[in-house]
Image 1 (cartoon, rainbow, N blue to C red):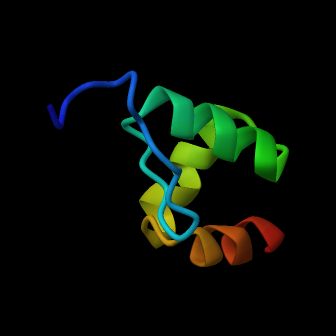
Image 2 (cartoon, helix red, strand yellow):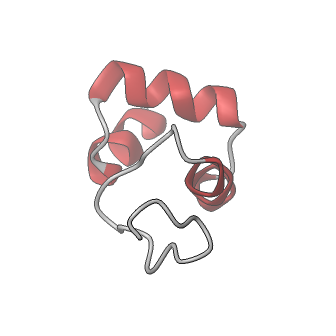
Length: 58
């Protein structure tokens, strides 16, 4: 069953999916920012984690 949220598997280390609560929470914590700041950065540069990381350093 593909939509079984209890079987999330390994989080993608390359992409950030801000539509998944656990990813939003985990990536925000990893970057040390709020969830709103993460959403804003993803809106600006896309979902690639490296691009978001670079954006946050600006």
